[in-house]
Amino acid sequence: MDKKFYITTPIYYPSAAPHLGHAYCSVLADIIRRSKALLGYDTYFLTGLDEHGEKIEKNAAAKGVSPQQFVDHVADTFLSLWKLLGVSYDDFIRTTQKRHVETVQKVFHRFLEQKDVYLSHYKGWYCVHEETFWTDTQVGKEHLCPECGRPVEEKEEETYFFSCQKHLEKLLQYFDENSNFITPSGRKVEMLNNFIKPGLNDLCVTRTSFDWGVHVPDNPKHVVYVWLDALLNYISALGYLQEDDSKFEKYWQDPNTEIVHLVGADITRFHTIYWPMFLDALNLRLPNRIFVHGLMMMKDGKMSKSKGNVVYVEPLVERYGVDAVRYYLASEIIFGQDGQFTPELFVDRVNADLANNLGNLLSRTVSMIGKYFDGVTPSGFKDKGEEDAALSNKIHETIQIYVASINDLKVTEAYHSVMDLLSMGNKYIEVKAPWALAKDESKKEELAACMEHLVKVLHTAATLLRPILITKSDLLEDQLGIPSSYRNFSSLDQDLPSFKVHKGEPLFLRLDAQKENEWLKEMMATPKEKAAA
Image 1 (cartoon, helix red, strand yellow):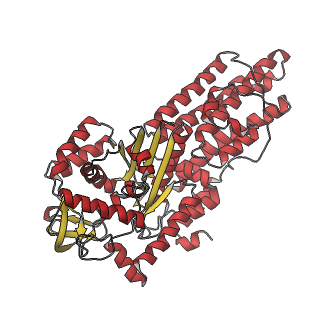
Image 2 (cartoon, rainbow, N blue to C red; image 1 turned 60 degrees about the vertical axis):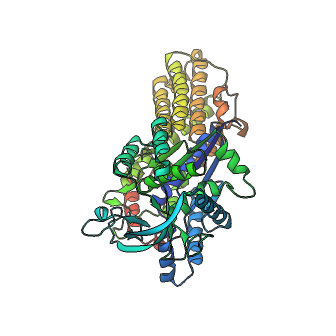
Image 3 (cartoon, one colour; image 1 turned 135 degrees about the vertical axis):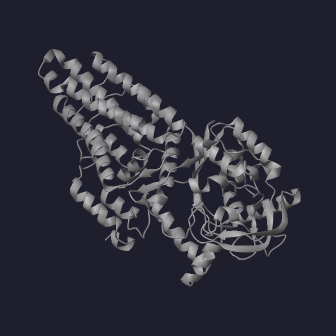
């Protein structure tokens, strides 16, 4: 394959067990990866954990365990959650792994030799939670972190700094020449106005006040500060500066590879300003795009245990299935914007799109083929009138919108277009009235063409929805009798032969709105260990 696609999530901080808000980015990354693979790309998907830092050291001490024991336990919860959600990553990087440590230490030594880092002292206001230093102006008179609102403490220590000014001009040039580098575009304006134009300071890249991190070989009392350490995961996982760097050459160095980092808004600055500078210092190519996704919000703000509004994934998947959860995340929240989870929205989306629009169309189509054609799908019948032609055009248009949207990372738009096609398929049944056609022998070919068009709609939808509906798409195709050799994107350009349909259970059961809303609200206010009971 000539077309390659490398997608990453941020490496999550393992300070506590993950919930639906944490899962959002990884599920969307998985959907994008599967979609690109469907379109013929050679894909590679990286996720993982950022396991170093003062906060981890303190959390472990509070639990009476070593930092490694602490992160090992939390890592297991992330891995279990990704498995439950069908997150099909190729690699799960942990910054405590030997391969990562090796790359970080070699990069730091190179920076020293190139004079990209230098030794000095730092004094400023430090937030342990955000692992970030702030200026007097930023923390204000109250001395609160501008990111999380927690109290900060004044610290002074010897540190190494990365020389940002050496690489600033090339960064600004890259901003100008690559309009899609930062998406949404408003984030680029934010970076320029809030961080670069006021005067970009050199970046503190080591600490001496704690021990849990990658030690600087040339000066072991220093540990590499979280942002240099963490950001290098994107190339350490591929083998950069390691004995086997074949994946690095394939998925980073190859100009045919499209490189996309998905990040949250709170870490945009580090990915769009400092990460490109590190890569420039290493004489490496920059990513094609940094995509800043929105937050998973509740009616009363971000998910929080103290607010009693946390949505835990395990009971949600157990009750409604993984496909329903994945579909809600991709369809209800416009990718790149903040979105909301409410019980009402979740139930309405499952009922309207999955039970009614998709499931009902499948059930009606299979039943009619069974009744009118002895369970064998008609084949070889072309458009029989303007309704047929309009539906054929809609199928073609949907495929085009889907491809363009996925390639521009407009995930929500891609899948809304599929639902629009299914809606037209349901309306098509009402207009064509197959039950009336069946009563007129002269309309037999028109009836056959009607069934063939419906099968084509469902096959197209099943194929395009496959990256989201990782279990139900195959069940849908099973009911249509479509063999595995046709379950791919290239088959959408082909005329399907006849198959034997198999009536099965409904793909998605219609939910009792009142009952499920009550259950969801109770689950959201229940501690995790009891929510799954």
